[in-house]
Length: 86
Image (cartoon, rainbow, N blue to C red):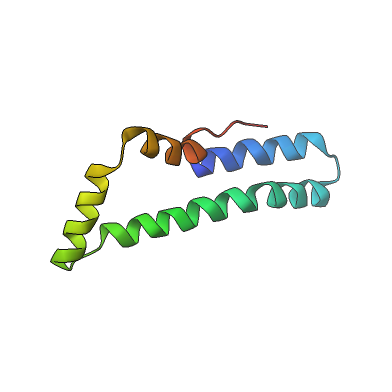
């Protein structure tokens, strides 16, 4: 998913659900923190793998990617792509 769009949807929902703006912003922050942390960490790990330069490490990475069944890859992406708005 697109984090900016998700942020906008969750923020709009929080503000529509609570007339107390500081409370709504706190609820928004709390509701987004876990997901954005997960996506940020996952992105960092993927980036680290993509930047491997040692030939043995690159070969091992490429072999692992080719050997990973599509169902496993799909499940790994579900947490990112399967987001549902509030």
